[in-house]
Length: 335
Length: 267
Image (cartoon, rainbow over all chains, first blue to last red; front, side, top):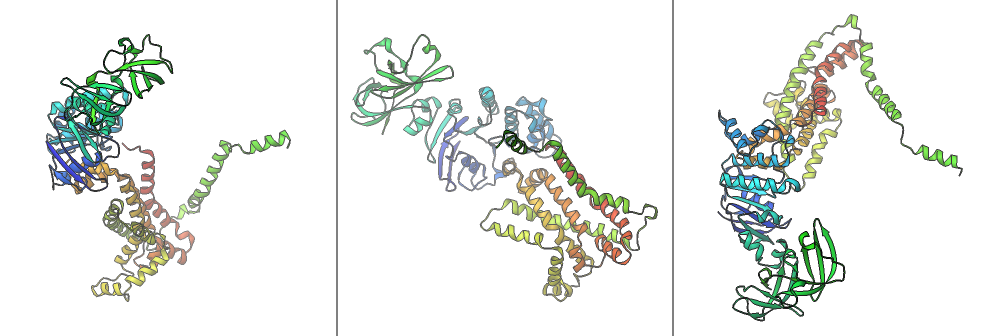
């Protein structure tokens, strides 16, 4: 499904993107992601398609806001039955939907007596009761605690796949985007990149998109050499091999982006291996079971070491450290 | 300063003991309720009888207060909803104007109504030409009660509507319900406690309205004016039976609703 929506107030938005299966629109807080969903739902005035000119109650969409907005005065099954026309089969239809999301046993409960994940599933069943053509999810991970988040997300994605309704979820959580079938990146009110998460996470289009997607290391330099199998980018005191990327020319000013988790200690490899840099440990910080190492020297880099690679390694401040990055993990962007 | 004096100052800064707070609260409660207890003792239970015309006053109060309450709810609910939902520049002025009838002393309000709806006033004159007299008539009585009760109802109902999450109303729209259905299925049920409090408040105000009624509609006499007449014509002892009836019909509804809203956790 192609979507194009434009908004002037309270923020300027011009979003054009595709929605395929479970799609995530990733953007920073305050970018207007919720406004976009409300515009598509017909709750605020906006120009765009599909559904242009239809009143909110006539648009074939299902909308799950943050916190899910279940009606507190209605039981779970009554919430699900809310959009259904009055009739003999109303309760049976609602119960059928609740059964499909695994909550038939809790049908008589009020929302206050349900957990965050259960509320989300009731809200999903309620939104699907209208047989929408598009399901809109606003920050679906925001009301979930870390302990159960992944499990509930897996269930949510499985359920929306089962129902076969395309989903547009907006979020600032890259983790959610990684689980999507399709994703887009929203920056300054526009979609700057879209595609399968694997491609977008590997090759962000701009430095700001890269930051949003979790890149922490950025180096500015120039394209030094273009070869058949790859290219070399270089700064004042460093040279890195990278995979060949379209549109690059020798001498072109570029920004190199490297993920912290793609850097690995490489002292055993010595200076002969590609992309090995000799740096000094500038700061160390434990992050759960991993270790974040901030390094200085010819360049400043940030490395996240999983605990398997920490074992037997004595890292101290000021110590020299060889680090390596595979050429396919060196992402080069034209400036 | 000696150690003993320092200790005394520190001790005096301690929060008052719990028993002192309880005692103060009990004293204030007794002060507030004592006059009601006095009614029990002041009533001559062996000679408990209504004065002539009391039953008629009860009928007038019950019937016309019910009518006034219905009109207050019918007219006040849309106004309260509009005040709660519509946001525009200069809304503070509308809010201030709404408080005007609330802050005006009832007697002054009665004089204002007389000046506006009286038979020789411009608007009252128009009504008179249409055969509707708005002084000392049943419509005047209801009009006075409406002016006494509606501001209270509108304020309470507005607060009740403002307490309903706009997001829930929006979700209802995305679930295929139009604005009117959303009002009935979402807004009204969620605002019901506040609205019933407003209804109870308006009921008490309409039943007990004296100042405005005294000026605009001395006749037909409802309970408050009849109490006044009995007091003037017969004496204090003649008002107690009617006073008991007033308490019995006016107070239970708001009392019950107040207790219910305090005890009932929402859903």
